[in-house]
Length: 335
Ligand SMILES: Nc1ncnc2c1ncn2[C@@H]1O[C@H](COP(=O)(O)OP(=O)(O)OP(=O)(O)O)[C@@H](O)[C@H]1O
Ligand SMILES: [Mg+2]
Image 1 (tube, rainbow, N blue to C red):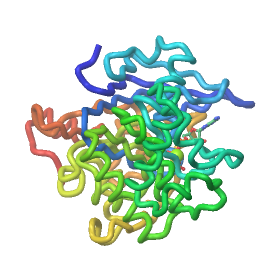
Image 2 (cartoon, helix red, strand yellow):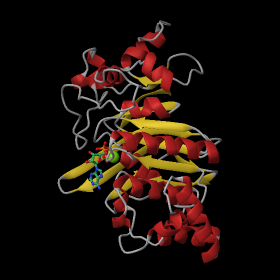
Image 3 (tube, rainbow, N blue to C red):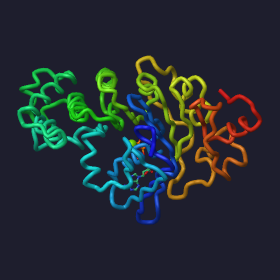
Image 4 (tube, rainbow, N blue to C red):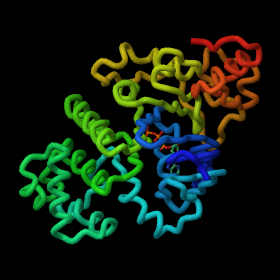
């Protein structure tokens, strides 16, 4: 098993659809340790959500998930029954999605939806669960929590619903929180508040947080480590400092230069790099970024580069033939 809280090795997820197979995730490695705030960034369709849904085994029937290792908290997730997985979710693993309405049930009160997991996972009585629900709503900054518990999701604004989702996700003190574009639908001020709240919760509970976003500004303001995905693969990973100040991969460099000044309000949107992502029904044999890469060499289209560390034990690596060439000749990386 793994020494990390979460470890994913060589994850491959494909979808069978009419006309072929979509190879959404094509062999990626990710780990997360207790209490760390990890960002996963990349353009739309690069496989961020599918990666996380694969871990949680929340994909549709047409999905095939394979991995050399999928371990969480000492458990082999590939071997857990669907029932065990359902018990894990909402207990040791909390989730927040972009649209809270996909998670909140319009037919039940907010109170009900916070209390249910507490009764199920923590075996709390109704009374204990209600007390905890009030505490959690208070913690996420919702005023008059006692009254609010009796209300239904449609009586809350978007930002408030997202706070409720955080309250639900955090109420059982999960070891891992997976947040998939939790703030994309919200306006700038609310977004900043929600991210701040997630940071607070992470500090308070030492939860490992995996934040998926296509907003590098959000990453800069919250994460300590970053994974950059493209075309179902990881292009680069490293500390937030390494990624922002010493990027290696031309894709990362492209992402960074497509935003003007990162890290101020945390709200600079990406403008796309010219060209479009690869067709995942026919993924290229080599580096998926080749067709859009100004530095592409002949080998890039032919063979997939391995993840190469910028230095031994640096924790910063890129899957790029330029980096491999640099490592082979002992040259320092680009950047
Ligand atoms: N159920 C499915 N059936 C077929 N293809 C799917 C399915 N779910 C996702 N895909 C495909 O898998 C690829 C990766 O999708 P994914 O949702 O992970 O992207 P993403 O990085 O989260 O993008 P976004 O930033 O838009 O959320 C896409 O090409 C998508 O069309
Ligand atoms: Mg997504």
